[in-house]
Structures are given as C-alpha cells and as structure tokens.
Length: 113
Length: 112
Image 1 (cartoon, rainbow over the protein chains, first blue to last red):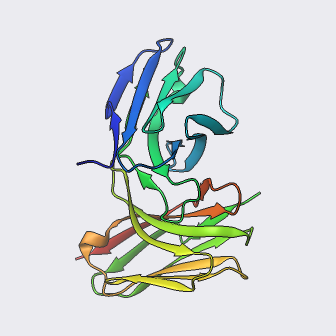
Image 2 (cartoon, rainbow over the protein chains, first blue to last red; image 1 turned 120 degrees about the vertical axis):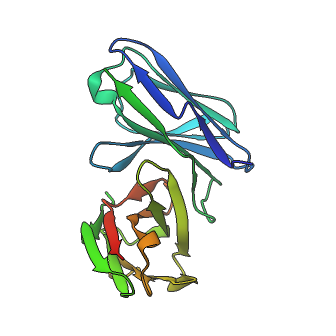
Image 3 (cartoon, helix red, strand yellow; image 1 turned 45 degrees about the vertical axis):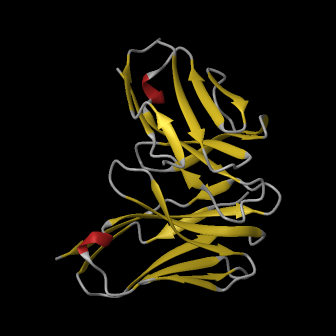
C-alpha cells in the first residue's frame, strides 16, 4: 500500500489550461507539503498544510492554489498554465514536528506545451 | 535564511570504492537532517535521518554523520556498487519552521 500517492504521474497540457494534481497519504501524518523540482533538479517548497490549515506559503504565483479537504489529502490546482510551470511536483507528508522525517510521493511530471 | 550546499555536484567512481558526499548548511539551529536518494525519473527514497542531538546514523553500507556546530553532514558509502548510481540529496529542517530545505544534490555514477 503506497504511503504517499500522487495522481496523475504524468500530465501534458497546453498553455492557458487549468489543471489539478492530487495527493493522498495513509500514514496518519498531520502535515502535507508541495515541492517543485525544476529542470536543474533543485527542490523547493511551495506550500504546507497542517491539519488542513495553510502554514507555509512561499513566494508562488497566485495561479497556484492548494486545497486540503482533510489532513490525508492535499491537492494543487494551477490556473492559466505557463511554459515555466513545467516541472516535477512532489507531495510529501510528516508529523508537525518531523521527528521521523518526510515521506515523499513519486512525483507528477507536468509538461506545458 | 537556511542555505544548503552539496559538493561535489557530480562524482564518478569505479565499483568497490568507498566514497564521501558532503552537505553543508548555514544555520546550525536545525531540527534534523535527512539524506535521500533519487533515481532518474523517480521519487525520493529516504536513506538516513539524523536528529540534531545525534552524531551519526548507519544503515547497511551507508553512514551519515552530523556536525551541527560546523554546519556539515557527510554521507559515507562503503564498497560502492553500480546500483548506488543516483542523485543524493540532503535536506535540513530548522527548529520552529520544520520545512525541509534541500541541497543541490550530488549525482553519483558507479562504474562496473
């Protein structure tokens, strides 16, 4: 049973479209994260939710909107997609104090054409 | 602001060599540090996690050390194998913020 699962694994879409990526964790963690890995493989945090409350919101265009319907799910909606949004998006989860570290999903490769 | 750097950026070694990957961070007020492995096109696999109060952790052929005062961690891989070829990432969480800041990664290739 996958601990942190993301869907879809691959997403190819045209500029200007709106798309969503979904993440679910079955570890019972109370904190979930979205990270973006750019073409140079650098991972940077975008958002974090703790018990459905947004606690980290890095400098991200407001075309990106996270939503956490419950503490096991964190979705990422992206409006008006741009070429520069092409990247791999990783979901992760942990406890509030990550004593046991982070667990990552397998990533969603988004390609905007 | 925490910054994490990894050197070398890339490393190519013959099979069987022992090797050391380095990670340095600028803010020593860390909560813990986690080493990950990423295979091409794949997600992140956790290798070792060191709490701020610990000096080292071991798992099989891997040993990670932590020197908080000097802002450094090393990942030691013994008797390297071609299957160890991957990108190795270190990530640091600071006390209070708990978000992980990632290093730039070391791309390792072990030649058969």
